[in-house]
Image (cartoon, rainbow, N blue to C red; front, side, top):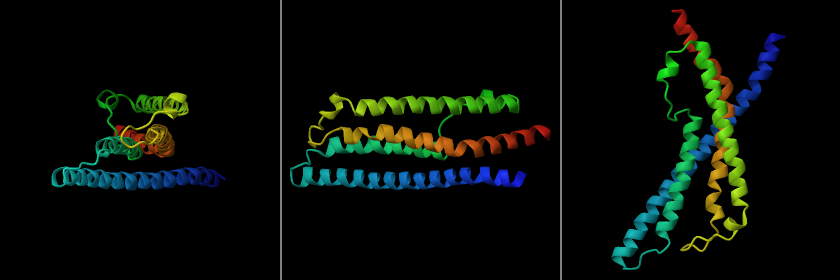
Amino acid sequence: MQTMTTGYLARPAGRLNRASRLLAALEQGLCSGLIVAFSLLLMINVITRYAFNSPLFFAEELAVYILIWMAFLAISLAIHHDQHVRLTMLVGILHTGVQRLCYWLTELLCLAILAVLLWHSIGWIRSPSVAFDIAITLDWPKWHFYLIVPIFCATSIFHILARLPDRSRTVFALASDDEEE
């Protein structure tokens, strides 16, 4: 009976991890596409500016939005890979049980912050002030560009929830093995 329960609990976590990996692959692909678009946009702008004396008037504004989207996607990707910056000097000298507690507290705090940010960013995008905000040189509504904030929050929450069960088991199992030696 115990193996069935373990297998049953492992399957959803495995599905979450697979979905998180697929989402991360999509984010990586989008980042790669955006960096190519950014590079091409700037190169074309330089060529049209200096060769034809006719720069793309929208290039700089669009380049800024591309960079913003890349930054948010890259942060979500770093959260998936658990490569974001953290200070571990103090936590590293604590007992394994306290380390586990600190880990859970920081992960729950990150989830709470991301959830609040998600809630407020959706409200912000739906507000009348954003609905009528237009990108000056592109003549497009800005809310399309602002969508990256709730997308980032949702994907980051998903990545954290997907890695939480496995990470808490494996990291602290290694720490307790080190203490026994």
